[in-house]
Length: 346
Image (cartoon, helix red, strand yellow):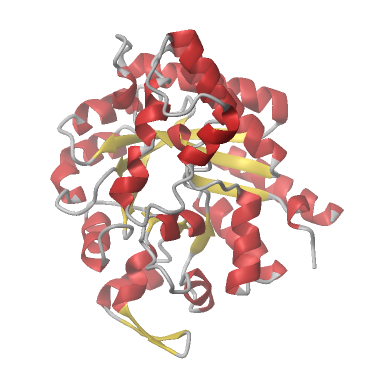
């Protein structure tokens, strides 16, 4: 059995404000004069950020108030972005799509464009230092009214590091279809579309996201609710699951996060394994490395130990992610070569 640390990894769903180092949170709070941290040493702050007990998306998301609070200057955003790439590189990641909502970082007068530019500079520094290919997905918050403005800012950077547009935040009561205009702005401006769906909402929310233009599903794990399961296997599909399966819609599954937010009910087995075995386009991702105390290696280890993933399965989900990536074709070829080279060296 191959050591997970040596496996190449591709991450498509990783939130910038969900992956800070606790030491960086403390340092940025000192630099910016932020006094609201709930803990003031690295160990206890890391424990506070651990949301493995939250069991709800609302509770889980509350921890982001603290990371966002210290990410309100260009220097802070640049540092967090650079360290994100460095941390992924140390974990064997060869390609990463990092997402964030620029509207959350305007408290000290930055524009959305300045926020995006700061993050791109940090990612470029990380890429130059590590060789990891890093790209950006811009989030609009589905419960807010500024999605069109966010999409317009994202389009300014299309072809300059920004590759996709996403709707994040609470799903129930805030359908993707309410933001069709913003999605059109992003798509017409050259960005690809992934939409959070099938995390807090069920198959109907997934259908709404697909009807709104989603090419990938952020999480999408609750598609299993539109399937018939017997003895741990999917034996039949409902109409929405059949559509996702037929069109090979990539599922950006985040094992640890799905359990921590209650997307997968407590005490039940995560369905990623049976979705993969049924032929769904499963990818594995981190979501929020700080709040879920995870990494791609930990997600791989969980898939192997708890869900029965083989080495071949881990290679399959990596290949799925490479094909689903929103980067340009020259970058994709580079990532394909990097994955192949790592496997050849094992």
